[in-house]
Image 1: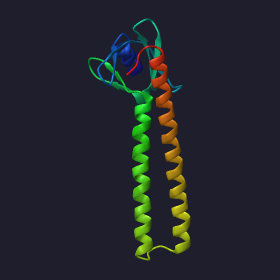
Image 2 (image 1 turned 30 degrees about the horizontal axis):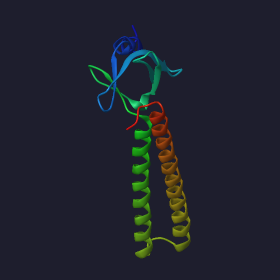
Image 3 (image 1 turned 60 degrees about the horizontal axis):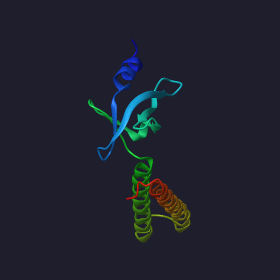
Length: 145
C-alpha cells in the first residue's frame, strides 16, 4: 500500500467543519495532482450538495478536516504582502537618507515597490467586493448575518 492510499483511507468519510466549528459534512472525494500529491477534497454537505476545498484551505486533525474559506486566506495573504511592501519602502527610504543607494536605483526600486503596493490594494478591493457579493447571495438565500 502506498502512502497516498493510507492518506485516502484516513480522509474518506471523515467529518468536515469550518474554522468556526460548524459542521460542513463529510469527505467523499480526494483530488490529486498528476504526481499523486493532495490538491483538494470534496465534501458532501448537509442537504447533498458537494463542496470543493483546495489543499491550502484544508487543515487535517486526527478527528476531522477543518476548512478555511478562500476569502479568509486571501485576506491574510494580502495583509501580509502589504506589510512586507511597506517595510521594503521604509528600508529603501532609509538607504536613500543614509546615501547608501544611488538616486536612480532608489527611484527605480521605489517605483517597483509602489506598483506592487497598488496591485495589492487593488487585490484587496476585489476581495472586498467578492465578500460583499457572497454576503448578498447569503442574504438572498435567507442566510443573513
